[in-house]
Image (tube, rainbow, N blue to C red; front, side):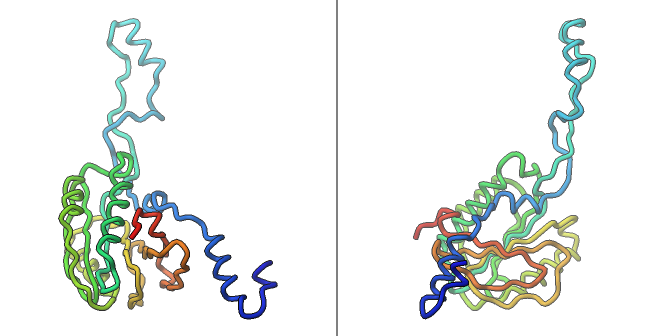
Length: 232
């Protein structure tokens, strides 16, 4: 209603303030879960385990249960994934580090990570600058500690998608669920929809509105510097 009645030279500023105020906070954890894949994990399946027979056996046969606990349960976790980082001239190194730390914090929770993973972290400005394959939590931590950004040229999102398509053809991935592209600027988007889900993560200041429009087939998620823990 305020937007409707706003008139004069202050209308535009008022509309922008309302957009910021009413913007929903991003649930980054829930967002990443949509890229998970089905698989088996070594744990008790609470849905199928019958405690009555189990405890009855312990009571009657002295520490010998009638039914052993199931060893595997079908779960959904992150297994294959691509993280693309925009390393154009407008990107701050501290912002990239905080984004990786936030992503790792979510991934590293036991319910989100398979034991064996295949995550590629790709740096790109107007061309591919670096690609590091991550196969374990230890390697992810090491990458965050030693990461060095390369590039600082213009911004073009297309090389990453071409590169990933080639990796799929070369059997580097068996079931790639998704790609997230971390960027704080503008670039050239691919015209064709890739065969995996894609999201562009834009980081902005708490009191600014990001007006970048992504292609119809891509997901756009706005995170503030406060939400990823970056303060400067």
